[in-house]
Length: 458
Image 1 (tube, rainbow, N blue to C red):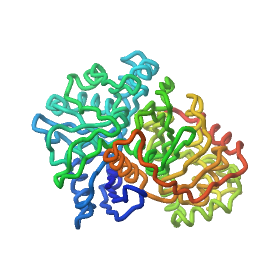
Image 2 (image 1 turned 30 degrees about the vertical axis):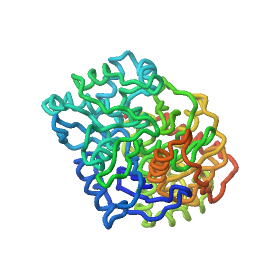
Image 3 (image 1 turned 90 degrees about the vertical axis):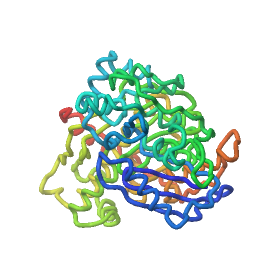
Image 4 (image 1 turned 90 degrees about the horizontal axis):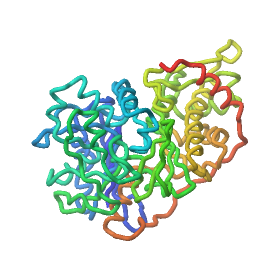
């Protein structure tokens, strides 16, 4: 089985044993660090990542892709303009307009399970209609990154397909009903382009040019949940470029505050999710300021006391999605001569990043999600300081899965499931390396909240 992760940063491919889930071989190719990109760059990266016959002998392939990206195709299936990615915030005003036009956040939550912000495809389509009218008029179909790459891997035969998970991030498909809201699509773009058919968890999207079965694929967060083996009561906190907190749930959600996106998952269930724009990049930035790396930052942070002696970092380095402050900037508060040390700055960076995710957990709890265990994944999750401080701020046991490419792993698990045709995905062994517990530090969160709530919206 092969699983593909077409992420913001890179295309990663893992080939795994269908029975055990063990990785046999893998490949990787980077993407440009941009928020707008020609989709053909992903195809080039996929070909580079699979060079040397990496997936030549696999029986099935599935793709997990970054959510929300807007790819507009013309009548011939050619891309009209570069794709706008989830982290491109130029459609923030369009999002606010769409929310108001439908009657407010509650109406959107009831219609699609989510209140659209600049990340969502529907808002990018409105931006396109307002700023590139000719491109909008030429748009014959709209697809998402995983839809497009799956279609390319299949030799562009037939039409692109999507799945429930990725469709639920568009802003014009309802997890509760399982149907598109084409009226919302038309409201955004000005007309109704074609949209991909929505496949079930083990339906096929065709075959590769080599004859392997193509799974339906899904969004990256849905694939990560499948890859890490999350169940009811598990909340996955993923610390990559963005930070996400999500859980597999038995019922659809509709949070009128907009904090929780009511997505579907890759198993036929649901995936309430909270996303922050700033996670590992916060640690990257502060490590650069301190002239160190992630390991050095972790050592410094653990040498400081909880609360960093009053130093608080509000980590909105790239604006923010939750809370919805697309034009916000980062802020260092409480700086005094007595606390101006590398150790305190490192601690404040880790605490600021994780306080945003602790807020995300609170938002999930308010929708009825039971949080029994945290599964901490992503590049920043490897930091001992992140693990220890997360356990204190999240006030729940933090389990540490072995570092893996969990989006690609989840896509591979889906591919194996498609071939097996069983009611549930294959039961691959858990890969936990341990569980971290720590005494709660509510004062840290209170200090963070005071800074967060006293900042202007923009």
